[in-house]
Length: 241
Image (cartoon, rainbow, N blue to C red; front, side, top):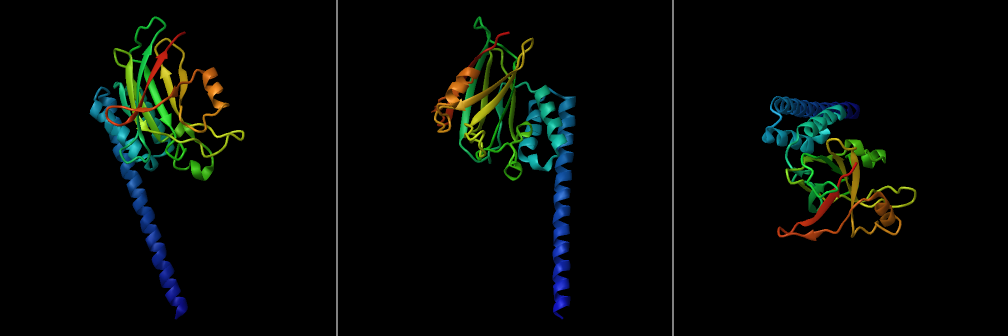
């Protein structure tokens, strides 16, 4: 009798697990279908800001329901079609303190650089780029979950709204890597520029990392509350050949 009872319980558990897997697959397939539709709409009407935001929101909220290849395709599409000078890199539910970065890009003569492409990425508030980094113990920066896309306006200005990242949870040659935000800057006719913006109040930004940042010409941000009560900073970049 006990064996029959155990067999029934096991069969019931198997059915529950099978049902859960099916539900997960259905959810993933639905999100993929919706994302494909949004991508198709954006390709047919690349100047439509509403459709662009729709696809970016899908990438942010349903990141884990999309395959690696799908995420890369959507990131490339968002990069190639972005026209706004403002990017919101995270969803409202993202844990961590909100920060605002206003920036300006000019040339050596002080003239504004317009239509410069910026792709922004960072870790989350735990120091991970993807939800699987904590398991693999590797930081998969190219597949970062928190990403933003923008182009500078006619005055060379831009704005980034995101959450404050954390330092890497794994040591690098025995050192804690300070929290930072990656900015990839692409201006017509100029070499692509990669920058890391760091935080002045980060305890990990010690006597080793500060000279390193100076050598690399990486900005160190001193966040201060703006009129909206959000921690903010102004970045100024001068691009040269």
